[in-house]
Image (tube, rainbow, N blue to C red; front, side):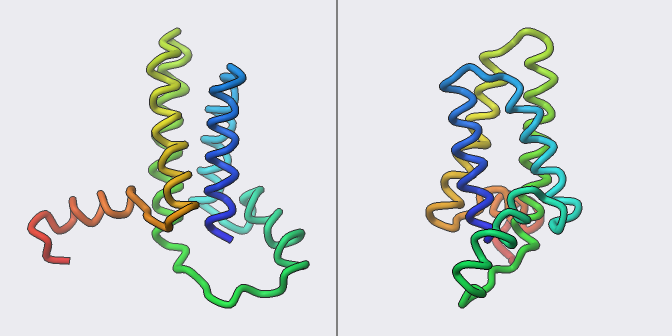
Length: 130
């Protein structure tokens, strides 16, 4: 389920960039913030639960949602920053930040690598102690 959300995020953000639809940045900041605060109300997690999982059955393995919720919060903050920068008419920088978020989402959706969590661990344990 969690990788489904990441794949949708990557497609939406890359699509917004390609089609010059700037408002996808603040909209997706809200979606990610919802996923970080309360996963049960996150739109694409609900879509997965009601449509996809109902047809495919329960997953055979479950991933820990904690790291992904942390990443959603961190990525939402980046997109809020991108929104503010975009409102200052600095579209290039706003899209640069949004594309970094999209790349992170694509990486996590395809490989399971969560860069936000790796950075968090590096900050918490700078000498590799954890």
